[in-house]
Length: 357
Image (cartoon, rainbow, N blue to C red; front, side, top):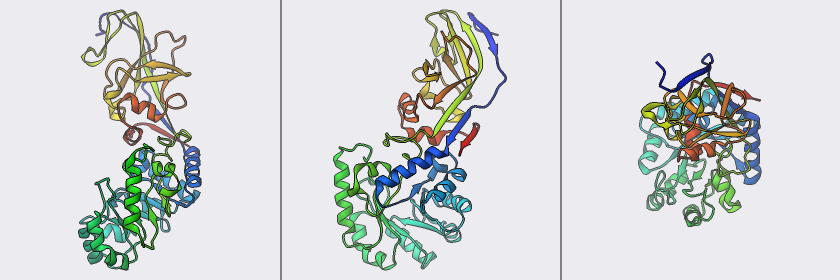
């Protein structure tokens, strides 16, 4: 039964939202960050290449010249090795966790050792197998503390690690004092170390050459996100219109009567919801676009559907765009009080994924 004051206008066959991923733009972004780096440039492809598909993204980056890849955990490394084959180095940020030895050995992964315990476990289970070292320079998340590193340094360096890395906590805020503090700590902890050094991801690349060392590790900037303001957009998300209806002044929309019309309105229901990674915080505040015109999301985001106020449009649209030319992934993230990383990595499996090459 229809709510009072609701009059269906048009019904469309249910279709799938289209997620377009421009691999040409992604490659251009990697090359731009590579030029800024002035040293070897790797690629962070954890979380299924930030949600965009490791099977398509990683081979592209390898073909463009990336030879150092980074993932979060060994399981991701195994999947990446299947995609890339032998050759490129696959580095694991979480290091050598208990039970990882077979995966690390068989897939030829390079763990970033984060502690004395990891170091002991690695040399006992995989003697002679390559490893890198991660240092804690103030983020207090992963890596060896200065005292731990001081005790282990000579032993670790005698095993010929592939690299020594750390990670910046506030690189997306260029003026934050933490950046300079971590740079100084990293320099102190690596003084005299004669292996490749790496401190910077996208934000660190943009801070300048003194943060680059021997290898940079861009992630979000490759995928079109901030803080790389010059990035080419990589992702477009078009949501098909399932139904459009006229509603009267005072009619409610969605669960919990989440929005009330204050005038006669036309409401489009589009295919997409929190099951697709479009989080509930986008309700009542976000916009979508149609030919550049911004249209407000009204009511709550539900599992599969979102409602949009399309009052005043001359024609009934076949789709509305959430991410694309007129709204970046970071704009959409801001609507939800989050960051572009979360929006990208949450994009679900139901989309019709189209890759531009």
